[in-house]
Amino acid sequence: MFLDKAKHLIENAVEQFSIIESDPSEYLIRFYNGKVTIAAVNRSTYLQMLITKGKKKVFKVITDMQSLESGVEDALKTLEAVEEGEVPEVYPKTTYSALEISDKELAVEEALNKVIDSMKNVYNVGVDRVSGIAKLYKTTYHLLTSTGNEKVETRTDYIYYVRAFKGNGSGFGNSVSTTIKHFDPASATAEAAEYAVKAESSKSIHEGKYTVILSPPIAASIFELVAGMCSAYSIDVGFSFLKDKLGETVAPKELNITDYGQIYDGVNSRSFDDEGAPTGITKLIEGGRFVSVIHNSTTAKKWRAKTTGNAGIIDPSPWNITVDGGDAENDEMLKEIKEGVFITNNWYTRFNNYRTGEFSTIIRDAAFYIKNGEIMYPVANIRLSDSLPRLLSSIKMISKNTKWIKWWGEVVTPVRSPYIMVEETTLTVP
Image (cartoon, rainbow, N blue to C red; front, top):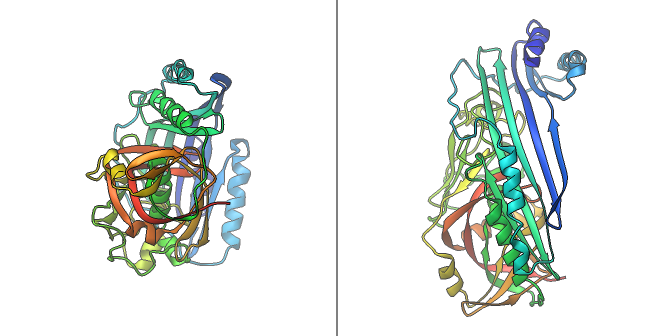
């Protein structure tokens, strides 16, 4: 293995090290208009290497194994040249428990057949075209640290996102799983097609404040932002509205957000972080209160806390975010709204002010105007403008059902999200 060679090159020149070798195999299936247009296999190896000496540290990612020796040499030269600072602590000798949440082998052929079969009947509902991507991964991780920690584990991931189009209407669907058993492109494609057909012939609405229902794709993008702002680093550098709010109520008591290092269908699952610390379960918001900050060893030392197993050498970050379901049915939410909008997806979220949490995001794909508890017609060309603290505090209903969301556009960290109903949300138009 390459990490053994890296260890040999650095062990007499550094005081601490944590090396992770990752060997991902990616199977990419891209389709357009219901037909597979690209099928590719990418295999690679890369090393993440943390090295420390005295009060100096270097973190380096080496992607070219043919140049491993020169990459390590560059890291050692950089270690001598960098200024002294806070040094992360490579986790002491421990054991790791890798949950059995993946397939033993990646079911490529079965996954491909599921994707193709998902489109066989979708054109019967009247869509013009369907396009999307399936990404299938089998990744083996090897950990080796100067403190004697060693671990090898293999994960499989199945990720599928699809858009369907009908006239000027479009819909989005997503399926995320760690096993072929729960990989369900058929439901994702059917959902995208249903939304696309219903969203055709959209109308405009006036700017103003509306009660909105956010479906899992857009709700997940909101909760990903909130969980990321629970990072000690984000708080310290002013990229979080949660500064000085630890222990305070920031949302209704029904809201519970948790980060899992490992969880079934959480496709970022791993038993160890970049410093070699075991990952775990960290409650971030419990009963509406901000209860935990996520740490690596450096931020934990500064905060006089313990690492939560979320390194990120520089920025500790969540692994897999879950939001507990509530007690509402989707139809109940709809009936509660006198005037509002049901939103299925978003795109291009940008912050006006990270410290206050002010942001805006473009509403993408299907959205529907609601009047007196009924969907009246599809709407388009709207933007949601709000702040995270106001939005969280204005959640009035949370659905019982939840769904895993992850796609390259707005939800990079996987989130298991419910539908949420939020009052007094500002919608603007071009």
